[in-house]
Amino acid sequence: MRIRKNRVSKMAVITEITKKEVKEIVFNFFADECEVDLAEIHNETNIIQDLDGDSLMFLELIEIFKKKYNLDIELKTIGKYAVKHPIQTIGQLIDMQLLIIEHENKLLELEK
Amino acid sequence: MSEKSLAFVFPAFANEYPDDPFHHLTGFAKYFEKCLQQAAELVSPDLAEFNFKTRTFLDDELKTQFITYIFSCALSSYFKDRGISSAYSAGYSMGIYAAFFHSDIVSFQNGLKLIYRAYKSIRTVTSNAKFSMGTVIGLSRDDVLGIIEQTGSHVEITNQNNVCSFVLGGIEEDIRKLLDFAKSEGALSTNVIPVSGPYHTSYINPPGADHQMIMRGIQFNNPAVPVVSLIDQKILKGEQSLRDEIIRNLYTPMNWFKTQLYIQHLGVSGFIECGIGKGLTKNAKFIEGDAVFLSPSNLFLS
Image (cartoon, each protein chain N blue to C red):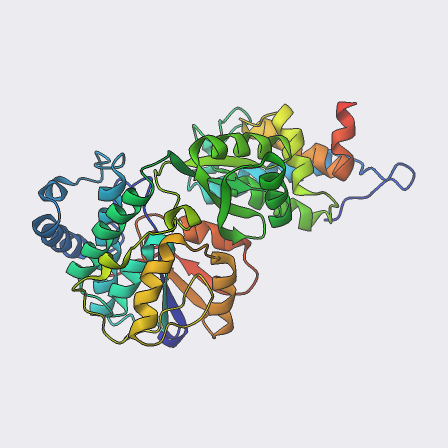
């Protein structure tokens, strides 16, 4: 499903459907990659400590969302944002992905 | 999958071990034990005490290289005995010795000797300073080169794993500063690699360095399986070219990204990572093309 974008602000509209979809993608991704039962993954699950996740998984997930939502965002924009908002849990990662979908390359403007 | 379309790739050295690397591969433990015993008799009796579950030797750079090599060679023999052969082989960094063993260029014992001598030779030429290596993920090559220039670091790019993943080597303090700076410039991830040598940098080839002693008395045979160089993405031909590769591999940058693309261009549609971990397999997800990448944990053989 492609997300609909607001033509005036050029920001994507994050609907409940989008939130559900992003959550499902993230949960399924880590269940597959880390070979754990889907039921063991929660918003509070720590990606590194509980799932033995790594930065390549984070990168892969970003690429999945970039393709799925046709996002215009540079990796280093995400990196700069992540320095100030470190990701530790699945819930934090989902929140960040939603912000990326919504703001794309304007993500850092949220800091101003 | 046709055997003609397979390439075996051999990783450098492990920084983590699986608890039970044998459960997918029936009978493999015997191959590993046999190689381990031979290595213990030849280079270090301590190797006989190796145990995956206790993470033996992970803090010992040389012995970890031995264990990685032993595991890779055992896997190579295990696959060969089951009729699984490859059209090409390639060694990632210090994985070159296992790739040469797989291609019947050097014996198992001589591969161990090459590892030991190369390690000692590198220690000799790098004893004047503290060196280290690191990784940067999420920046472009131009970004990384710009940061090196901007920070005036004594650091070099030693490898490119994919379009936005780089390995660096150089002076330890500069590596740490550069990684911190890269993070502030938008790198998604930076890590220090726990090694003491700046492998694949010019620091290993200072004026007057002579690594030729590494090769003394080592017999090189014609490759039974063509080996692709990670340095210039060419198939190594002739004894001198094979010997030169062992030496220049110590101090020349490599490019794993280009090498994978080149091997696919040769018609390879499947890679098997012949090693303890699955780092190369993970990284392959970011390489364009349809080739399948498998690590031993994906394989079920009897």
